[in-house]
Length: 346
Ligand code: NAP
Ligand code: F7E
Image 1 (cartoon, rainbow, N blue to C red):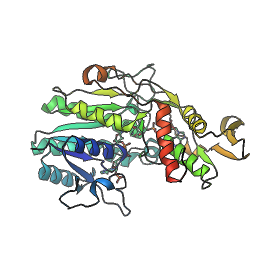
Image 2 (image 1 turned 90 degrees about the horizontal axis):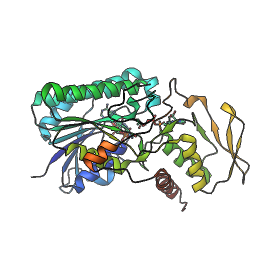
Image 3 (image 1 turned 90 degrees about the vertical axis):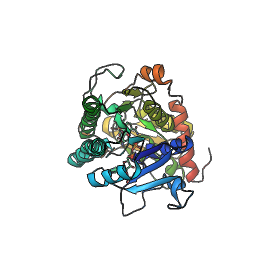
Image 4 (image 1 turned 180 degrees about the vertical axis):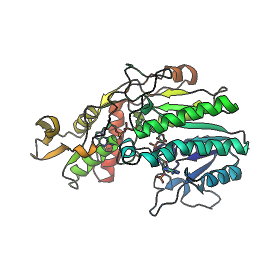
């Protein structure tokens, strides 16, 4: 019999890649989708365009992390072997504007799902999408499973709650409940308001003459950036271990937002000149003389995570997992996809 998996957040970047991976591995894949007034299934359309059709690759269920009853109903209908909790209000900047909602969905939503699993008494394994945002204002030069947390945003605090609750259910009830502490991972399916995708999409639009200028916030923040399809493979491996344990997944390299921006412009053969300084800094295209990148305080956060660099040696040792795609390759993959959409070949 096929293994059954439930993915919350299946319409998101990671959920869509994980669904594809699990289908390849011959799982029966069930996804939780929330009702939206506009179509929110673009990333999984190719897997479910014929919902109800016998060949449909995934089964979708209406539900919401804010609605315990829907979670209980889905668990009892599907009787899953594995649950991947990827749903969240996942935007750090937005979490400062919506701290209560972020806590309700990202933190308490995890309680609702874990409680639904515990009370249903199903023997399913549970994966929690934990985040490098837990480390926040860390002073450790590299962060691993032992590094103390110092979250810097309502999102980071909500993820800290969900992390500890997952551990608590493991320790209190003997449940197979694990955290994957994933550092930033990106792809052409990355949401358009996360910085890497905003950069690749805007540069493609600028080349196509559809946008004048790209406005950004803090260019100095450093992140450990990997490629999302590799990271969902790591999630699955974490869930196949005999003992439930928490793991860091990261590339072991760090780069600033500025590095990523300049890498992208180089890849597109855009020759630029940096002008001004501080909040007045701009990038001008030397060929056209136009300002193509400028700063906007709108994108600054009340508290910033300045530096992240992950140490995934436990995942390498115990899971045989390692990130392979470099930031240069990642930028190329994302730029090619966004430029292709504009009819520009690189
Ligand atoms: P994403 O693209 O923003 O996807 C988030 C998903 O959550 C979407 O499917 C969204 O549905 C769903 N969702 C939001 N609110 C919900 C609610 N109330 N009930 C049910 N579903 C809800 O995020 P991602 O980049 O794939 O990340 C997946 C998970 O990993 C998230 O929990 C994120 O916080 C965490 N994480 C991400 C990274 C990263 O670098 N990508 C790193 C560490 C941890 P709609 O499509 O309807 O909005
Ligand atoms: O910001 C800076 C911003 O929003 C990265 C989520 O998946 O990864 C993600 O969170 C950096 C920050 O990702 C803009 O201030 C500058 O320093 O792309 P981001 P994030 O905050 O690292 C973690 C691991 C998660 O768990 C989260 O779910 O870029 N930045 N200018 C900007 N950021 C944005 N979004 N937009 C800008 O214009």
